[in-house]
Length: 436
Image (tube, rainbow, N blue to C red; front, side):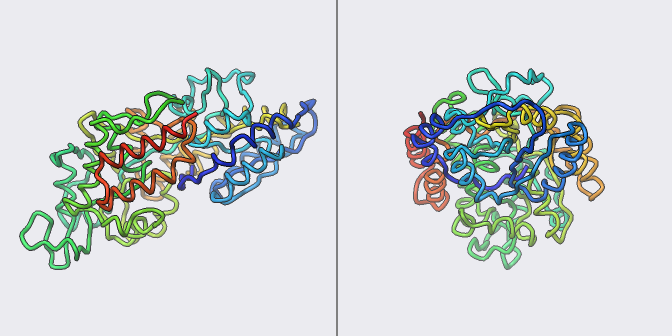
């Protein structure tokens, strides 16, 4: 499950989409011969889905599946335009952040007729695609945030692997202590030593930057703060616990100097990923979906550890995709057969065993673990985290339109132009103004 940055589509998905969908009709198919269009955005997963679709077609003679690949930056723009025109693909990937807009506008088919046993899937993924008590996306996979680290830098510094790190808003705990040992300026000094020069750091201990999925939302949740008051509700991350957590993330950069300056890492820059691959950052929170993109370019052994535990324990983001059916598809019966198959053990095992994703269907993750073990990487910390306390990205309307404002506001926060309290109040106000 690729997890790129989210683009805004809510403006296009407004009244025009509602009226267009009302005007568009759709007719049910007879379940006979059909050619379905299946849309995704990940070119690496496409190879796995070619095997999946071949197996599906063998089990369902007369039904052919055409896989359509779109780059992520084009995916949602095209999906929106196709929904308006009544020409959306029969089956397509759905992401948590876009789900509220699509489901409330009637784009997605109710999947209740499939009678899926949702208890067999990861509960967070099921919750992400449930609206008014009904399922509108078959759980496909999940990605989860863990801590990637440079084993070579840890060994060189004589620091123990970071598998039990802790943090508190006041800077106490083992995370900051460990990050200091791994942060070195050009003269070999650490941040807690006299003469350390924060303007001439050659190696940082930790990657703290403005990325909500892998960074500050995890701090907020593990400090007992709330992102939203309820699913399809209102933003709430300007409470005291959330603001304290935001302050901690900023302090790692501006106060403790164990993370690169925001001027280098603020979005839309992707520099932090390159810094980790070049060995300039020792610890890097990341979704497991990033492994195929980071591992090949790293000139060192990558270790994986659980995220640091905060005052409320270890609480990490889990972000699952789902398989959605276009509500107006003229081939809906065949499309329903396809999503049922995609949510089943045969299809999800193919994708897990190929090392593409953690499957949303319980009991099939070992294939994913074994794939990465053959590549010399132990991904079990990701899997163990998925069985603990996790949280979804905010599932509420308006998030896609809010994302750009949120990024801009928090860019200023990481740069020190706004205090965390000011940034949180402004962001929550902007976000709630877009909730419908």
